[in-house]
Image (cartoon, rainbow, N blue to C red; front, top):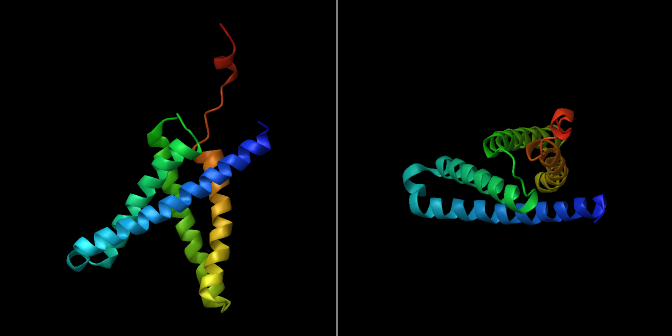
Length: 142
């Protein structure tokens, strides 16, 4: 399989897992809101479902997209950092496009999502789930 085919397959798996994870996170939000929303409030429901979504997304991406065998705790930390950064950039870009430039919110979010999904794919591939490169000492027999 060529590098381009491999990249395409990873990209498709990334999008499928992302769609699954959005559905999972929304389902978690619905269940939490239905069971405890009146008691704990919508913000607690949101943040709990968001954390569950990040953990679920990490597991699904690690297994099905990147097929990683690296140290999971380091990857999980990087995955949380990436997701926090993406959320912050998304929020800033919405402020810029909607609040400052007066563009409509939904089309702005669609464009931002497309840009950040592409960015997340490459950051995940090259930083979060990147297999450690062999050093010259490790690859040379003693």
